[in-house]
Amino acid sequence: MAGNQKSKGKMEQAKGKAKEAAGRAVDNERMTAEGRAERSKGDARQAKEKGKDAFRH
Image (cartoon, rainbow, N blue to C red; front, top):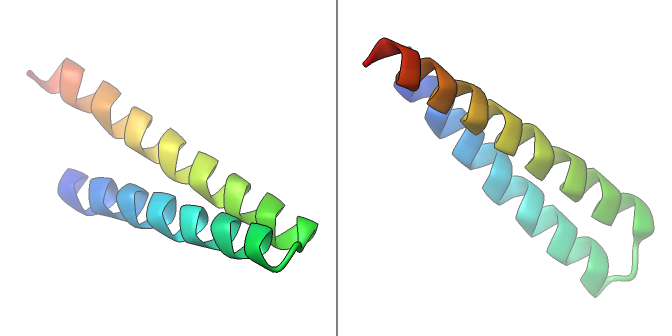
């Protein structure tokens, strides 16, 4: 289960980064902000899973 959440976090980070770059390319503030938010969500998920791993070992 933890591996699934880690990969979900990585996917959110990548998707957010791509969306943010696309938003900048077309000069769309909303898309850029959505990308940043999605990337932050992925970062938070990754941090949560790393914390779980620290207590597990």
